Image (cartoon, rainbow, N blue to C red):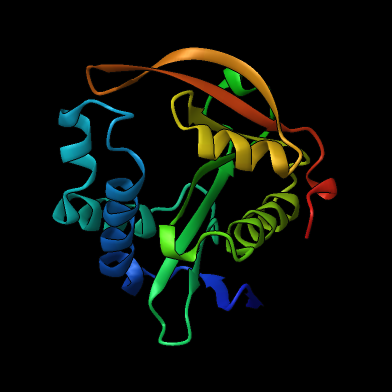
Length: 181
């Protein structure tokens, strides 16, 4: 466990699924209006769907210990990072940051960087020296954050979220040891 930006970072527990689902839905509601079609936004901001997805994700993680949460002093979840082995060869890396979300009110305090660094430590411990994260091209905030942490744009593609096609780019960290702590 570590502290950063007024929050505590710790491994996610199965019991966190309801709060993680709520936080994830809220983060989508804060971030993606106008960036994704309404149908996808409605699906991703449905707290019940997000809670169920997190219950499944935490019960069968892609990488043990691969989801970490940032919480405030009142133990409210402010954000999370999920990491795993690369799920697609298109990433060009052995590791993947499969999710990094932070509530808008918690941004700008270093929590996003701290979550990313904590995820990098998990990946390094699992034998992954590099990693990438997919980000929607329309999400300029994510692109700016990834660039500020040393990632460079890699492969671009049209990714499908159900039947919805969206342009996205893989942001690559070629050496996780070089990520700012």
